[in-house]
Length: 206
Length: 206
Image (cartoon, rainbow over all chains, first blue to last red; front, side):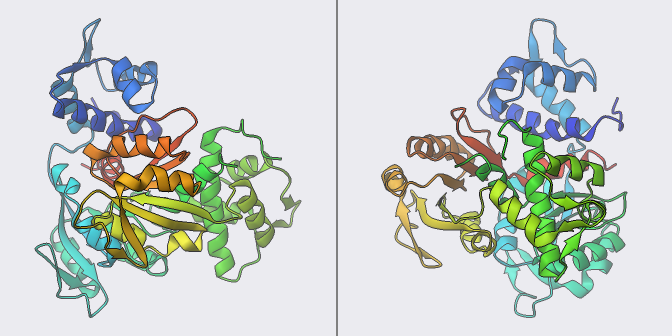
């Protein structure tokens, strides 16, 4: 059912649909329409119907979507019907905040290991995870077969960390460092940089 | 020079160009080409030339771009040739990490006030900023004429906080809470949600 040739911009909207649907489900709502969903997330009903139709027929004509069913389908499509082990590299302020964020576990993302190269941080606990030396990153990540990583080191160190992650077999990197990473084509990188988002908004302010 | 009818998707790329250009400048590099810039950030040279041409003629034929000049122009276009005061709502783990992030100040974004509704947090210091009661948010934000805000409260509280920010005259909200906010058309919201980014990548993993 899943066609990997579907444009990435479509793929990028699916997690937002899932987020909104899970929100409705948490509120005890069992069915919705593309119109209601669109109003919730600011995307047109037509766009939602078109995006979802790429993956099959999820709604019944005139009766809308069953939310539990659509949530399950989106979990399958996004490959989040399972737990993903992750490594976190960088145990500073941001690394701490991220390691303590409950939302990862709730969505099936489990931080299995945390690395840093600062001797003062190595051996300390974040939650119940001990910070390990970055020198062990490649070996441990590879040995555990971990494919997903988050980088929260300073910009100057981020590319070297990314190189190590790639060497270890990581295929998906969420990068919080404000620098564009150079990785092989088969490795996916997503960026989280608040400055980029803020500047995109100040553009519209006078 | 700035045409506000330029598509938002173009606007969204400008901060990435600026980030890469500032990175080159920090490395002591004074000129670049659309090709070099494109290689750095994974966008085609043609796209970069087309995007920038919407705002004027920044490169000299065959000689590329002067980086200091282009950086200055992008600062003007993005309205970041000044300091923006911000309020931060939510003084938990993530709020602390954000308040301590040096990158904001380096890019002209100054956290002026921090609010929370937890009595245990009110009155504590984050850096040199005292956490103030959320009950004072509307009044203080309006009185200081602050237009930019960041929300780091739990999802269940985020819409109420957004309503208060809108009431206070805020026009740009960076929302870290995993929920889509409903705001008037003249208010811009950008979202930072690691789950969305992770799911977009697991889609491509088997």
